[in-house]
Image 1 (cartoon, helix red, strand yellow):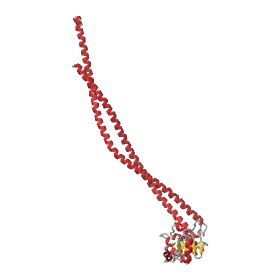
Image 2: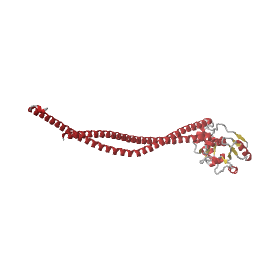
Image 3: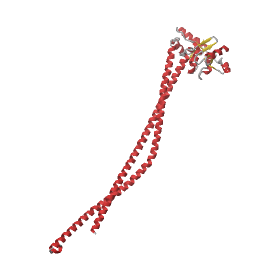
Image 4: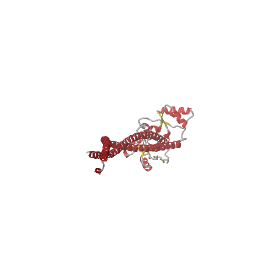
Length: 363
């Protein structure tokens, strides 16, 4: 076709084709430059992401290594907190029981005190107790166990409210003082030291116990021997009746307070009210106060230990949750990193393929 054109036309066509080729070459060169720059940028990004992935992998491994011991420690602290909570709840239960026991002991003492109100002259008794010759109430010198209070009251009889003095001279001195003040209604006694319970020999032979020998370790043995040394402790009034018929010089008493002697029986009152019972009840109330104080202290200590254990558990749980969150974050970041590197490598392949195509076209 160009053969048929004039010479000027052919030259013009050739010049046009040459300009088109030059333009294409310039366009390819510009594109190659852009592709090369983009390839370097993508390659650098992939290299950075590869380094970041290695760093994340190291951090994931470190977090995994730390996770096990922290989980073990958290479990230990959880167990310790659970045990501390159980101990606290148990101590609280004991405190509640101690409160109930104290209320019962106070109610018992108040009931006995009310039952004995009006016996004797309270003012004369207070005055006598202030006298230097008076040691104290008889029942305070006998260390009466609570379970034997009724029996001791029965054995003492009217002497259960007596005041004991240092000597017989003390009895006279206190009596004179009270009488001179127009007071009375008080029983005063003294005992001779060195006496042995009169019933002990029979008790040992029969396998029984004297009431004096069943008193507490702090009992005054002289007072016990003088006042209840002739009393044997028996189970049941019929056994006591048989005993005193065989040994009329002795007396017998049951734990319930039935008093048996050769002349007859004094059957116990259902309420068991007496000065020994009152003394025992008051001591029981004091012991209940002490026990409540111990229970309060134990409960407060247990609560403090529980609070400390719970705080330690909470701290370890927070540490564990923080590490798990960190591990989850690293895992998510690794996933994003892998997707980004995959996209970058795919783009790099496309760029390299385009560069190869441009180079092949230019060859």
